[in-house]
Image (cartoon, rainbow, N blue to C red; front, side, top):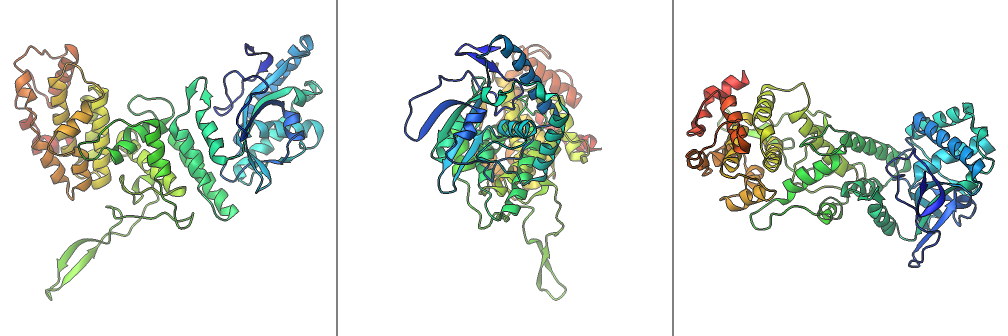
Length: 516
């Protein structure tokens, strides 16, 4: 396979997302003095380096498994055979992004570290030494393990069959910048097969960089945070979005929970909004190993005042038992976010809270009943109304735990169902209009309430007259989007015919039955 813009370049296939890039640019591109762009071989990249190439402390470990190394060897063997027929053929391996840091005397690799590390191991196996100006150092045990496995595999593989000057034929588009911020701007704007990287890709790199301190402690924290983030990304899809869960978490849940406040300036987020909220507006902690806490249901001194027999007031303390489960971390959705460790813990908490609510098997009766109702009715509602339902539910659980969760969910479904029942089509603006045009913003009501009853009473008072008004029209169960919604609701409540008087179906007896 060849690139049309570079017809002599063989393409590699064993890349991570950081490694896959569109067609390389021409060998030289005139740019500002702070940016240098060239096409260089692996050998020339190291031999001609004005400073040693290195990995900065915030970068993730080397994570290539043996299968990735094996694929690299296979690709290089294929290239070697093709080069016998075409001696000018080169092996193109994408873009390498470097930050020149004279103060530290290093060229730091921003993008491309996995490829360069794998090729460095191959170089050591074939030539008995690392390339000149090589200062790639990894301190994590994970990196050491993967490098040792790669070295063992390559030592036993038939790599001697590769062309003699293979390292002079492996080439990259090399971008060198003088500013670290500019480096990450480049990293942010690189395309993955023509699709811009998500803002969340930049957030991870930014907050890993924000973990300073003692080197051994820093590497431990960075490794832990990187693992949390990768686990977050692998979370099973919610709301049917893509394989990487991070964009769903930040766009559909965290940003909206924090920024959909008041009733005048409610809008959908932009790329810049995500970076502003979760990067620019985050706070620097006093030390990298500490995360500031704020008052929450998990972080309060007392739960009640009691009158003693001596007629004195005594504070009943909040239970001090603490669990390390991420969903129970003492954070609040709208609290200030700390850079570095605090950011990763915050994101981990709400990822796990969502999976507890919708995915995990071991759950209490309130959650079981919540899921049953969600799957029976809400899962078939408009995507935009489901997004609002889950957003409000996460905010409710964050504020009150699972207390009266089913009460809340039934009344919220009643309100959102009225929107479905009165409109033939639901558009993306529907949740914004609901939050804007009602007496109060529901999300603000949840965030400011002291007791679940305050939220539930607000939902009960919502003027949802659509059930009575629309019932006069010919909406048959199972026909059209409104008819399918009607059919689901009737089936869930065990009713037939009309939805008139639906509010009277939400009784304590019905709720006890669902919880039993």
